[in-house]
Amino acid sequence: MKTSIKDIENYEKELTIEFDADELAKEKKIAAKRLGERVNIPGFRKGKVPVQILEKQLGKGYILEETTDLLVNKGWSEAIKEYNLFPVTEAKPNIVSVEEGKGFVFTLTFTNYPEVKLGEYKNLEVEKVVEPVTDEQVENQIEHIRGHHANMVEAEEGAAVQQGDFVTLNFVGTINGEKFAGGEAEDYPLEIGSHSFIDNFEDQLVGLKVGEEKDVNVTFPEDYHAKNLADKPAVFHCKINSIKHKELPELNDDFAKKASKFETFEEFKADIRKTLEENAEHRAEQEQENNVIKKAVENMTVDLPPVMIEDRITHLINEFSLQLQQQGLNIESYMSQAGVDMEKMREDYREVAKQNVLTDMLLDEVAKAENIKVGKEEVDFEIQMMAMMYRTTPKQVEKILRENRQMAGVAANVLRRKAMKFIIDNRKGAVKKEN
Image (cartoon, rainbow, N blue to C red; front, top):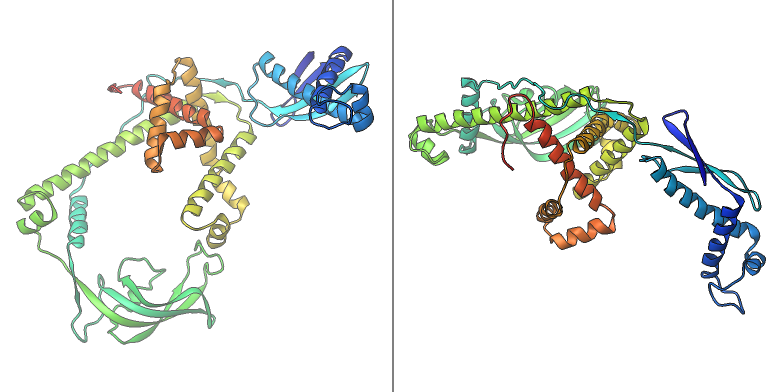
């Protein structure tokens, strides 16, 4: 077997493989034997049919096709080892020439995994920015908790809707006098001032009393998810059915005891601040770690084939589609509601997909450079975690993974997490932690 390889356009490579006449004849015998085991020819046992009989029964072209298929697979397999290839696309075969007594020449076109040159990934310096917790944030958190412990009381007879009230209402929406899908409801619950409705819808209800009606004029946002309504003026005829006020508890020691484990309001307030500060510290740590990985990616040199980004976009959209299915939805209905087509959706995923691919490449290369390995016990633990998530047994998860040839992917994910931890643990100023 003779081989040669060259770069062609669009990041593809072309591999030329040549088998001489003797190799073609040898493989033809193997092909004939395999075919003979699959066909029934009177007077012959399976696998014992002479080539000449098979050619007469099936035709020379049929056997030659089987022969070339075997040689393509054989040549591709050996060339992968010879050139240390790691194809990221399926190889497209093209027969150049095939003739008994002369040999077989064909080409394979594919995109190979690109060369990656690691830049600096150890001792990287990235600033850690912890946002200070303000008094306003503490007060807002207390008010949020206070709201959860509020009592809802019916408004006095004759009371008008105010900001912060909870109302139920009937409404019918029209555009140019015509009703539209999703624009009608009865006894709809709404918190005035929550801004859960479009434009200034809620503000226009302020001052109404139970039983009163009003036409509310609004304009749908330009980026509204339903494109058939975007940027269009609408009229909602509304009727108030009920009004409730939120009765908030006093901020004192009794409230602290009810809302927390603390005896005094001051202790409760101090704990709120402490929790917010811990959260701010955690967010800063996470942001710093993310930026360390981003910096390592930026330091890396690679000419990324577009097909790898396209494949990752497809993978991300498939994952999103599965999430929708778990919610009883589908990708088509989502795109219709969001007013996007598949082309727009793919474009929206492009930058995320690119960064995902680059990050995976970085982590794979760091794992090689630092000789990071994954043991069986680590893969077993990962499978146990997956079993807990899906509420099944590790044995069942492993069975599904093996059936779908995804075990290697599990190990790869563990390896990348270890490589990521290595980069983060070796950043400048990092305090290394035990596993």
